[in-house]
Length: 377
Ligand SMILES: Cc1ncc(COP(=O)(O)O)c(C=O)c1O
Image 1 (tube, rainbow, N blue to C red):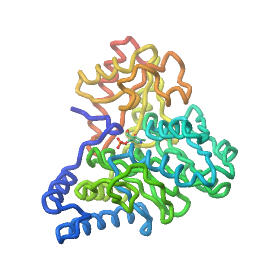
Image 2: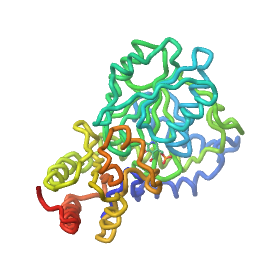
Image 3: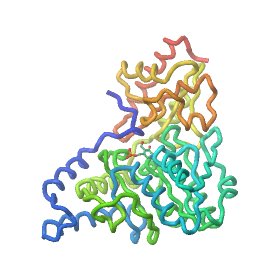
């Protein structure tokens, strides 16, 4: 099987799986326990934390381990809104965030907060001018994703951070689930105050993620229990998940060699452009590993099934919305032409892919176009 659905999830790396098993066997104790086994588990947990903070460039920052990107985004949005509400109740985000940000924002609106949703252009990019114009003295939080999971649009995160810092006292959170390991992500210099990372998008394990915070940025807890993670995220911490996530981050960090995703993406864009009635939804400054394609009057599911029958796994626009029959919010936000809206598929590369698989994709794509009677332009 050729697997091109890495934005939905990646194949767990053998060494990440091995470290998960080893740590679970050897450091199974509760890291909050006072006995020696507990202390050893806690020491390993703290080592994982330090490694992660060093990778994201915030050695004096804080890592809160969570059950994944969804929980980390919920914690950032709801937690900072609650922590800072004495200063104001105004929040800013974009129309193309992951549902774990958008629905948390909607929840806060019901709780009396006011939210501005920034629009995007046809490339999926926000306007820095619009961001600037929405910032107010009572703005307490801005959440802007780095790379969009459906079309790969990349926001100018440093520029956003600069504007937010210049014109407000708001905390800046960025969902970097799709960008970590593919583009530089850090909490240093002109970067965000808080970032979300999910293990299973970087060859780690599902059900594991984190919120990394610069020193002094503290959300309010949104779950309640034993007070772990300095009271900010209750629940016994999975040391094995933390160690496995640190390992996946070390392996996926930009310093390690990755296949040339950008070259593959450019090659496929040029290839697909030859055919009739197909749009390539690939922002000029898009992420290297995501490419979406829209077919005129063909349902995305039909294409996904054809590729599946020919040994290639791809998805409709995103795994979260792939079972829904409505047009995705990102496709709506970028204003895709009506006839193409239901025909969106997404190809996303991972480090297990090879150039040979790209060539095979082209063959299958050409056969699909042939079948539809949509040969070269
Ligand atoms: C941009 C983005 N944010 C957040 C998430 C949620 O991460 P998780 O699956 O770890 O909850 C995803 C997963 O699809 C994502 O693509």
